[in-house]
Image (cartoon, rainbow, N blue to C red):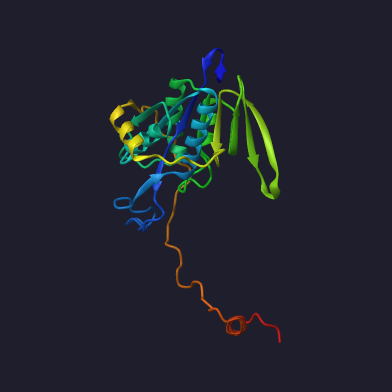
Length: 264
């Protein structure tokens, strides 16, 4: 069993809902954001990996797992899913429903909740589709004054430290040991996220294990602003050449010639 100073290790996982990219996304009237009124939402895929890693650590050594999330449409159902996957507790941070906070802005709110929980380890997805810079884990590390490591693909818990695996191009890996408590931005869990059956989800929905807390901390001010967004250019696309090799070869030559890429 994972113990730290005689107590069962406590792991907090931060979960975030993001726009579902399988849906059609429309721009808002201001041209600087997406229209969220009709867009589908889903658990961030990297946060899903973080949740799976936390549950795997729990199963390996008996740690306690708490999932936390900012309140909003669909968040309660997301936390119920976390309980069905193996989390022991879930906390809904209320009071910011009308705001769309990016990871940097939300960091002080999560940090406030984490201080009160006094966990040994915080796991969060390395980034979201709305947070391509991976801001949350580094900002949490700074606000909590804890060591922070991101782009992690495996976690080993020890009594007072954890060993983290980072993967690099060319098949190289690094093993980094940091003291606990620590913040980890997870890229992939040690195993793929597990399937949640409908029966487990129903049990979680009936359990009433989601507690609610006020999100009193002030969000961090954004220092970068989006000036404009635009849908991707779809004026060109793939050209199917068919199954006949000779015909395909002629079409390739013609296409290269049309673009002035053939030397004569």
